[in-house]
Length: 194
Image 1 (cartoon, rainbow, N blue to C red):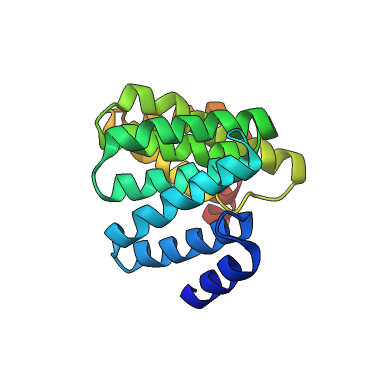
Image 2: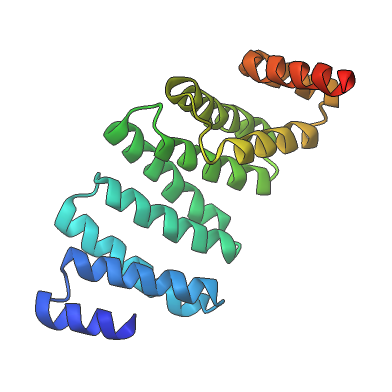
């Protein structure tokens, strides 16, 4: 990755968008190997390159903002992470619309940040909206979104942390996705017959 970065810097220039991709990839590797101090300046540089070359409201800028926010979250700099996540959400909503899977990921990231800071009431509508986007995707396509199960688990865990009973959580899920509870009820009946 370091070699790819050097090649692209030499052939394309230090401020080329491909260099931002190289920087981002190397930073993610550093983050994954707990070299967080080395990752941060690379992520910041990638963000600056994309803002300068693509504009501050481009979807790739949202990716860079989210990556940097996740690094801040990993280093317990939650107050620094929040505005980056909120800005990424705003960019993706403007770029893709309110019902896009990238928006759902942004909502989940921000909700998990609020959950980590015990702002559960602020997290709940974001987490619900995150789940609804994946439910709507599933309804539109006829295929479950790959992140649907995680969205259900995250929403359930948040509601439980907020003090809701299992029955209350089940009622919320049934309200959001009646077809899922019908499938579960049908499967339960089938299991009882066997």
